Image (tube, rainbow, N blue to C red; front, side):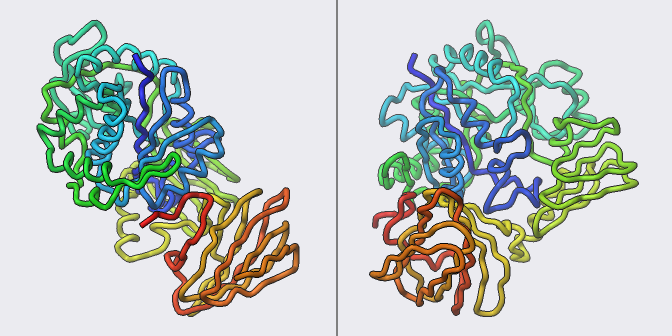
Length: 472
């Protein structure tokens, strides 16, 4: 058996974990449990001899984040399959299967979200090994988590008769149930939590998509055949955007007659809400989970998340407090599943807090908006060691750079200069320019932008070492 290809789904928005998780930097790119981000933990989980090089499906808006986080891991090659827009899981899986079929249609694919927590990776890998035989026989294998309690935040898989010694036929599905229904399912012993993790051959899932969702499949195939390919990145063409936005559950899983389920107990959690993070967190003597610089006095059974500054809480019970640089969430822990509604309201009102943090990460480093007004913006830019911004120009703004610390190589037109602390340069509107860190420490500078339009999309890249230029 060839090594299994992990197909890692990296397109979730995680709105229930606002204000940490935002559209521009969703939950999988944050260290919510452990030192590494959920995405990095997922990539590391599949870096064993059982698995081949991972294929990460990521939206174009998050490609830079994924590249940066993969680079930090230094765990070997990872391929990126970049979606031009989010079309849910069925089109994404269809595109991945079409791509893998080019190499070997009978290759096993393990599709997994990139934002789950699995404490016992070896237990999960053992289950994958056990499930491989059924998948090689053309079955669609689902991984069901043995429930530890009556949970209303997950869907359930109903198991039927045995398929083989380790797996069962799937008898049906139950959407996220009410508390009374969840208690009945838990007590009955024939329902497992639906992890959203699947394994199948590329051929098998393409056959099921052809049968149940041919419009999804045709768009995905066209997007793969006309994709732009460079290095380890495959950018799907705009044909992908014509695919119906439908989940793999609705498109295939609820209709297929080839489903089997393998039960597993790998200490799995879908960290989809602040209450879920409270569940898995290390609690103090009063049942509190806290991260960051916090002081809790007479607080019980609560989740408090600090982010750089002191967060002090007193005299409350069962609440969630989450502090970020530009937004604070305070609410009942029992209502944590409803935080997504707040995020939706912010997005509808076009509030920037719905999509971006004050500090925005890029593959070369990061920037933070310090002040913005009519016709101007002030940023703090940090360029990592060996970081190099693209060779670019702007249609609508000029820029003024002042180095605070570090050593920069600055290109403006035909002029190249070396700049250190307290030196500055002016970049006229339309002039081609580039910034590089050539020192052995982070480069910090202040950028002042002036112009009629200051959006990030007013960047015309001519050269870029991070492969962010798409050939036309």
